[in-house]
Length: 136
Image (cartoon, rainbow, N blue to C red; front, top):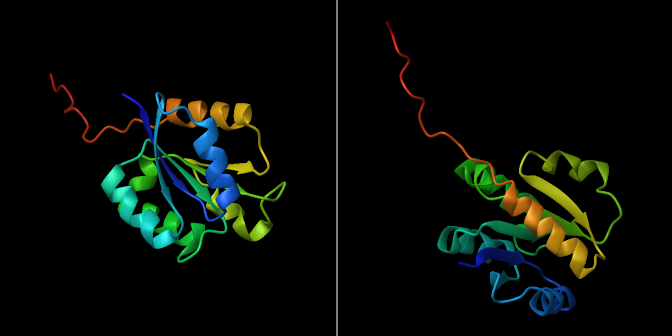
């Protein structure tokens, strides 16, 4: 079964890049161009990974990540946060919580695929309930 990717990207160049380098046999991709559609598709698609542009329109990356924290989705869906800066400005660093990684643009297909494999391969596994202690 292909890995489901939700790609929230405003820039047409980058959307085309993703479509070109992500093989359909390995990745099922859904593209959105704004924060509101991203939130809708997070619930509908249940992606294995969200690739999230920092400059996303209508809610932005901050809004999407905030909502994911509120709903608990950030515990089960890793995020690659992307932007065309070498390092995140100080104001944005608090966004890099567990499950969120920064990937600066521009990047090549090898870097993208390696980051996707690493993020999806390290999806956190959570215990929904603890086993009762054995009282002897």
